[in-house]
Length: 106
Image (tube, rainbow, N blue to C red; front, top):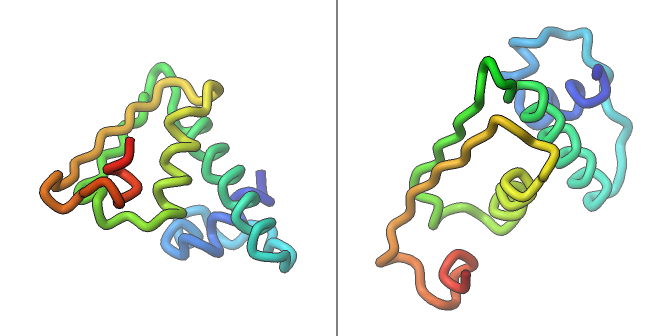
């Protein structure tokens, strides 16, 4: 929808150039609300892009450098049972990940 596209276009300016200026500019909200809104919009985008005829593959290299929120967003994507036709592949340098690292504890 226009609301979700607007949320994504604010966070991903290059996407705004692709989808145009018809997006609804999101209202200002608090940090937590903005994160939830972005997560919903991002999941909605992935759901709409990943179809049986056009599956979506997301590959991220050097995952050991991802921040906590990015790891949270990735976890939400890969555990969302409503997202079909989506494959997530990642690489990390295991010599840079120890037990105190968010990826080392798993």
